Length: 210
Length: 264
Image (tube, rainbow over all chains, first blue to last red; front, side, top):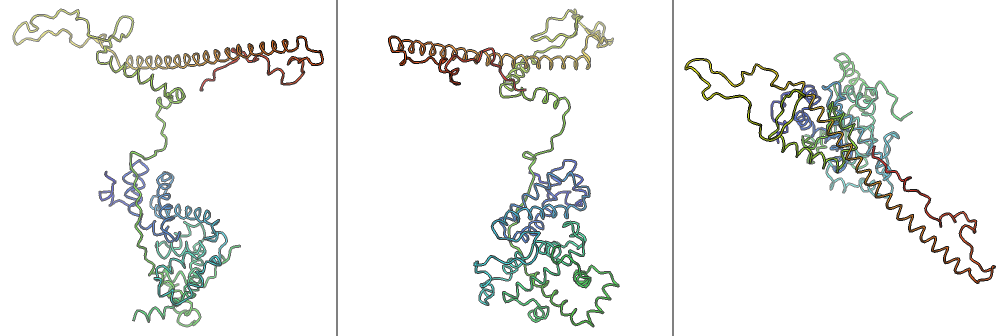
């Protein structure tokens, strides 16, 4: 089956592909989805904190994008648009998980405290755990523990490469608020990681590189 | 008000500098302040250090693909003109039975189309099936009378009366559609009549059976009452004065009251 990947469509911009899709070209959509599927999945994965939910949300996001792409006026902003869709789906998913006391609600803000009795807080504080758990896993857990709005700002800026202005468009808050959320998110991360025995000072990092 | 939503200009500038979002003059000003402000410097190093840690968060998950396959894609419903009109008009008719009849009609038409001839007659257009009748034209034994001359054809094709025009064909197509629609309506009418007849028969039987049982009950009451002391007589249902006594009588529902609902 020709999915439109690897052909002349590769040379087209997002805007051009969106125009083709809006004329009914399915291959153009497949090309566009392959262009951004890795980036979008990683965003969702970092937001959701686990691959199972991330896969579900990712599929749903692409399906929604296909259904609604006719409403996208600025094709050049497709990447921001699909992230906006994914972010809303993540929020919906968080709300459904709220009943399981896994995440704090998006609106509440503030640093989430893990459920008492889970044993994780105490466990993470030990040096032994730091030795046994990779930095990747710790970061995964620490970022998942952040309030959603801070995690959203950090992930979109740090990993997805959006500017503060673009994040402002996606999240619907001023760019200055986005930067503020990044700052407080970093502070919270530093505190969480510090509780787990990881120092995040520039000096330490410089020493570790030497 | 949400926490952390009030923006401190100092923080704003710090993060903007971290991601290179300051212009040249703002960047120079920030760096100058960084060199002279130890508190700002400490904040900066913390932020840079935390950011550096984040670079270690790589994902190794398999990325799911999303491919739209033409055969299963759901397209927005597009109006198809007269097809949509037919669907709206006969949409309910096109049930299983409808498709069976339509399919049969189409099959018959298809079979007949093999030898279908559309001919123009004095009274309009005629649809004939089967082998054409022998032409009335007398075909000369030798169409070429003289070598090198113009051959004389049976028909030179210039007589437009012999041909069916597009408009005439369209009119006939519309007439055929109307005929099909009438046939479909007729089929539905007959189907409703059959169901109605079956229901009337059912209610008629129920009525007869109910009446018979009622008469039987009255007979038994009379038999039980004969010779019995008056105080021990059984009362007839109508003498009970009970609200449900009517239910013991024949059905009040007349077969004619039974209407067969039409799926419209």
